[in-house]
Amino acid sequence: MSKKPVHEIRLGRIKAAVWENETEDGTGQKVTRHNVTLTRLYKDGKHWKDSSSFGRDDLPLVAKVADQAHSWIFQQRREQTSAEF
Image 1: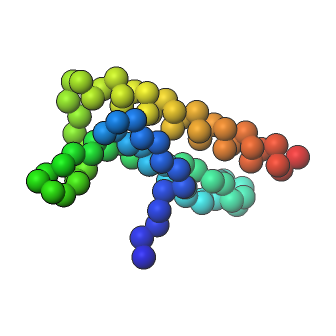
Image 2 (image 1 turned 30 degrees about the horizontal axis):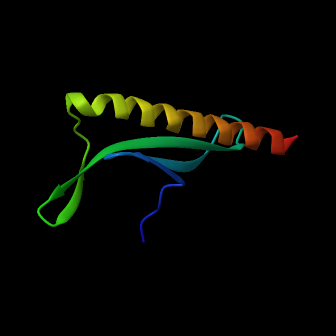
C-alpha cells in the first residue's frame, strides 16, 4: 500500500502533490516536513499518464501551482504552531 499525498493542487494539466514526512529535529522533537512533486498530465491513446518534464507553455502554470503549494504548506505550519500554544 503506497502512501498518498496530504494535499493536491491542479490547474489544467499541471498538478502538485504535497507529501508529509515526520522526522526528528536535533533535540529529538518530532517535526512535520513537506515535499512537493510537480507533474504534467497527458493522454497517451486512451490512458492518462504523467511526466515531470514541462514545455515552455506549461511553465506559467507550474509557477502558479508551486506558489499555491508553498502557501498551503505555510498555512499548515501556521495552524500547527498555533495549536501548540
